[in-house]
Image (cartoon, rainbow, N blue to C red; front, top):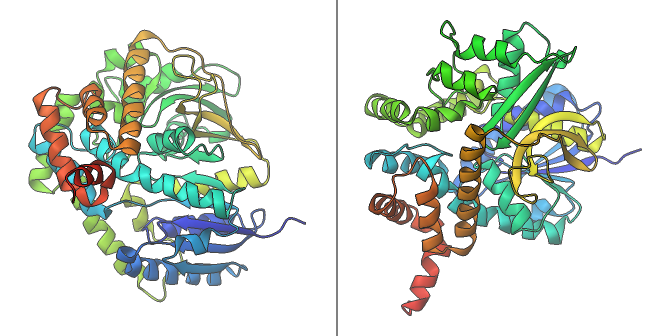
Length: 448
């Protein structure tokens, strides 16, 4: 008889936590979670208490034997954990708003995980994740780290390369949403189709096959991006904008919605400017939405995940995390799209680098499905972006300004030269409190 599991969620005060609780509840018959620790920092205490109380109500209403523990002490929580999930945001939503507003002011894409803002998020996040890994090595050396803190691909890269921690899987909800949307378009059950994804986080492509082995990618391209298509909004924070049909047809693969930033940069920039002028940046919109969610969560009668959470933009993240844990614990061999070590699955990228690819999830972790090589259109952009990720992670770890500038210059969404340096400097200054690796060496050198 397998013992009950101890699971730790860092960033436990997140608005996504009710979905995580729901995921564990519905899998309780095969995933015996006995302890779930929700961890946050002092600045998140109030949200942690609100979400924690709701989590306890959900567990009680479900009638399952699972103890919910709340703490601001990460090390206390990690002791003896079986799985650790990460869903935090360094600097909270105010930091995201700066990531969006400052690049926009300089005529560049302002987005949470792409362009200059996405790199700054990595600078703030990577050192914290590596600190968590060091604690895990000491306190729960056999635990798995399931990360859905953005930028998920770069976080996974950092954990593998600099944390030297193999038991890590990164997660994004974009492939999950694509599978659901495309299955519905074809009027098929998800289990009737085979989805083959490859690339890196927020920059992947995929092909789709039916149960007879026939490829249906072209049919989906036409339904989603053809001249008569009405693609709708696959991801909440990606605007409903068509690609150029001829370009997508030439690719012969379905793009990630975030490709709009690279394939339709001018259009996306104008959309962002317009939205910022009227409704505010996406971060400002989310801040208002989160405030209303936490009002709901305070209702002492609410003991289930409210429908409004799906508007948050990260639907199915937490449920997918639960399924990964379930697949590892029960050695299920479940097919999922995750961030893991390449190990030759994509021949165009380094063997040891982190990629986002279709995998089988077993007790051994994520086993990538071989993809091979990309055609030139995909390969060129992918290799540039992977190099940018490697430089960004290196800068996040070392605090080296020149490396950070090199990463900014390489990113297609950042204007090069003096403009890159200007936006980098302003973002670094805006987030100085969360970037000691960049500022502490200068202060020490100055004798401060």
